[in-house]
Length: 305
Image (cartoon, rainbow, N blue to C red; front, side, top):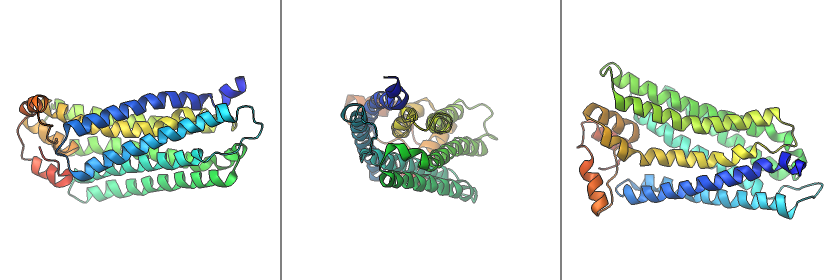
């Protein structure tokens, strides 16, 4: 039993916590489609794709853990089941989609040459993370047995390390752009402060998870799969941070005043229309009116209020 704890115990913990986070993903997805009915098709499509990918990922890791803890329990030399590289493919894709969405937001927040300086290196790094993640999945298929995984760990370490760097860069870029645009005009702006804290906290979740995964890879014995406790959670955290960012627009906007609301529109896009009915009418009536920045935000996100 001690051997199982040291190998697939982390995978089991990751499955349990990941299943809980998957439930949160489903709840947030329902809330999004129920509330933001006027959001553009492309944004709804991204949410749908992320939800489908996260559903597939949950099914894959469930099969993966069941296979190694039940079906192959006690087998001296375990082969690599197809669900192991498959869930790596999906995790890499989810991270890339969310990071590209974040980069588009940074691009939309600035109309000068600065957006090229900020987004192009970040896009290159995100693409590198996706490529090395896919290379790791391909190598998993080639090596065929778990015992040879330490030979290719450098690939997943590069993928996770680069992904964490992209998330940290986003955490720095958004507050910097907000400060450059509003810092010299408003000495005390609670909405901007809330936006900065909210953005940084969301990015820290994914970057911290990826960094912990890399640290465990580097410090624990090669036979340990404790890193799965964090790797299984990474795709769920990406989905939930993206959805929480979309779903927070309404509540953040309701707290804002004119200049603050402009910052909110610039950072998160305009809020989509609420569904019809008493709840939708109540939300719509409490939202502030449009600001001069709504047109700018509409050009970037095309989210109508």
